[in-house]
Length: 478
Image (tube, rainbow, N blue to C red):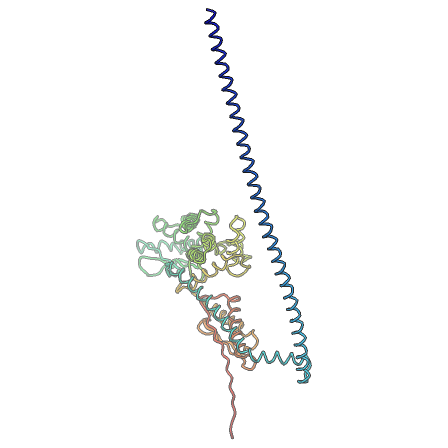
């Protein structure tokens, strides 16, 4: 048993010794490998440091070489600049010497020589300068005119308008001839009451099946028409009933104006407007502008403004609103102390309308300064709508005023001897004094006259200007 125990102890000691030796060997190997790795890393770091040092030395050498090269170039440039300055000074001295010698030989003073040189240059290049200026001005104006004509044609071709002519009288159908006597009433009481209540004239003649209502005020004429239709339909005609139906018809007209204004706004694709604005728009339906329905004219102007705005690349919505509302002041009977453009603009400003729209409405008759492109658009569209064939009619007074204004405007220019307007103011012939105005001055005068007509006068369509410069020499041989 003792021997077995000793053997076990020896085995345990041998195992422990082996384990200790293995552990020591593992630690020695690990420390040796770590030392080798550290040595290799140190070598690699040292190698990288040396390479970086070499590269830095090379870069520094290159930078020093570039600095030396730039210094040489700078020195060369300074030397060349000094040489150029010396040459410039020498040239100035030589030029001054030659000028003094030329003046001594010519016997002229410096001022006289300068004046002679300027006269020589003017004589040599005056014709070329005139021709160049003439070509530049004409070409620019022609390009602008062509572009404007293209935009207007493109816009007008996209619109289909009807030529209408509003009348100052309407007819109402009656069921029988007996109705005429009942409308007149005993001793004319019914017709007298009707005319006093409506402000319109009721014409009853021998024309069968109809009577005529005549009035220059479209709203009164419409009220009279509606009241008469109700009377004919009811069959009972008395002064009391006439007055009642006239009041009812006036209230119906108010409702119709609201509906017409709302329909106009909706037809143009605009958002609903203030109730007062829509009612005023509807009242324009019963008003005429040179025999043209004002609401139809406003809708047409709005459409033209929108198309023009789209053609030139700006927002068409404000243009459409400005075109629709530009004549709103014509329906505002209370504000008679100002023009319809200013009155309409003031109302729109109080209602919070867009400032561009307000200015376009106020400026469409040039009473205020235009602040955006929308005001000229309204002016152009207003002129297009009013100048199309059959849209409006003119009176003898307006014709005489237009002709007189054209002639007076032309006679204000210096050098104009006579001026005559032809073809209802569509053509203006101007005769100038040939002794005062030369050929170049005549072209310049024609341009200034055209500009003055465009900025001062209001007209439809175009005005052709013919400027005549004629020189005659007469003598007698005996």
